[in-house]
Length: 218
Ligand code: AMP
Image 1 (spheres, rainbow, N blue to C red):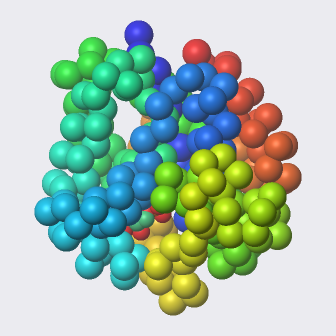
Image 2 (cartoon, helix red, strand yellow):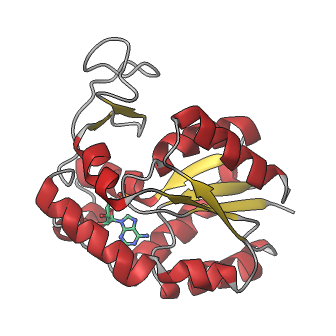
């Protein structure tokens, strides 16, 4: 059966950084809804036009738009063995839609949900130092600097600061997490697939803990 891992955790917890390592270790395609929205915004597609007003302001893009985008993505060939979902689901409605699509279209279900926990006061600090390239590779000016300043180690693309990585928008994003996404901890807890991981450790330690909880389930 295909493997579907859902990464949960507040903005700035390190989901993107950990996703790179997990997808490499398990040869699983990394599906980041944030990256998909940013790509569509960059290419000025219809979807990008719809998403932009939300992402720029730190608000959640409507469920219908997000769910349809993920379903299309999961049907692509590189997801035939499953996927590592980063940033989706973020609402109960999305989680229910995911369960339904996995069951009906892929005869599968969510395998495990590692949830990265980080002290709230550290999140804003982490986000303000974050830099990324257009391919979604993530760096941090203090904790994970690129070898050459402003250039991605992996693909050589320029690094930039996300438009929504400013203090005001971060607060809105944290609120969206608390109001909508945190409810998923209970949702997946009831299905006994949630596994909490201490995200206040060094990046490599977090990776070890993540790989351990995933290995125990697949
Ligand atoms: P991220 O890169 O995961 O922090 O996502 C960046 C932004 O994209 C979020 O602040 C939302 O505006 C939007 N977004 C990403 N994933 C979702 C989702 N599952 N549901 C709604 N909006 C999303």
